[in-house]
Length: 272
View 1 (cartoon, rainbow, N blue to C red):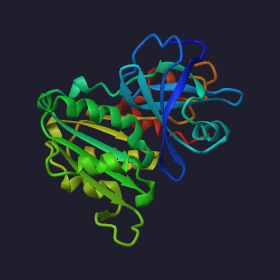
View 2 (view 1 turned 180 degrees about the vertical axis):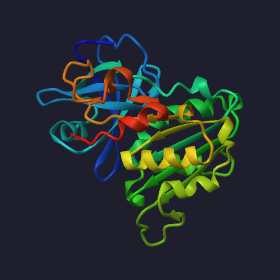
View 3 (view 1 turned 90 degrees about the horizontal axis):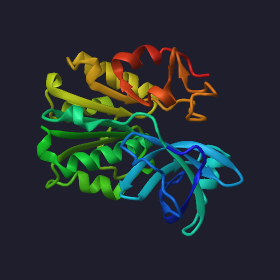
């Protein structure tokens, strides 16, 4: 973990949606000391503008990818970078998805929109050793088809030869949309898993997390086997500013990935 941002060079920029960009980076000098794990985040620094927390969306040795949604000045600067540009990186920070807890079990991954970004390295790791797990499932929901990131990869995951059972739904279909319409929890019936022998990984808008986790508990899944990512109000990543505090938990220190057995009460705290 680094205290000051280290320079990383942009090697590729890929537009995922109208307001979302994936930026691939390699070290321009010294790399961050510890390797990133799926679910962890970095403080990504646009020189002269500021920094924001962003979960890693792809890990390939020293090459890292971050998927950024344009919501403010810093994210706008990061969405505007080009290959060859330099940006800063601090990290890794926070807890990861910890796929080891799912060994021998069915795996259920549920993503809402850009929430698929922190889950993508988890899926990559599970698909690299599918025999370590039971049945692999991915359920993805978005507002529209145009809000789905990683369109090409989603097509590969939904292919018949993939060991991953993947289902996608949107709230508002465009003409010719071939898949489901509705909220992501309506896809639970299409997944293949045994609730008592499954670990679930959930990331997306808070309302989607709450509805999904409660639906899974209603099916008999233990709350501690439902892992959720709570990135609300992240700011400094060091626990000093307090913006990420929910109840007595500083999410940048004890999260963002925690079990639903702890997260349910924390999400009853209204956003600041």
